[in-house]
Length: 91
Image 1 (tube, rainbow, N blue to C red):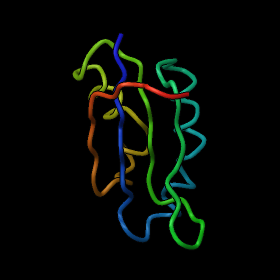
Image 2 (image 1 turned 90 degrees about the vertical axis):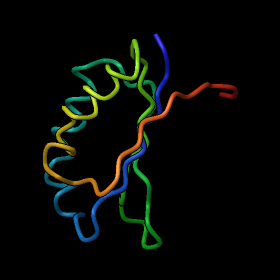
Image 3 (image 1 turned 120 degrees about the horizontal axis):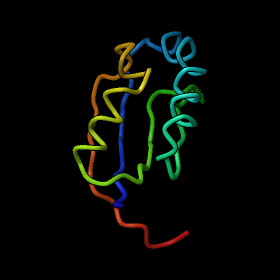
Image 4 (image 1 turned 135 degrees about the horizontal axis):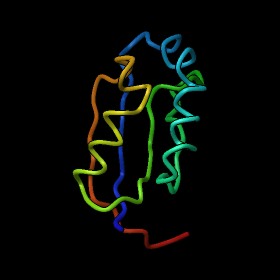
């Protein structure tokens, strides 16, 4: 298994889309069992505006499949998504 950082930035003005799909997103995280760490990015007002998800999966392809199946992605929430191999050093 390997760690991958999934970094997602929401499309502007999509907080309602995020909120409407949050329960499904959290259920997907629990169901898939491959998320090592996760949490939202916050804007200046303290509102959620993106996501950081650390995936523990076999390879980049598996990370891409997971990202595509995320209810947030399926709802069209994200303006930009990047996936990079990540090495845990502290924590």
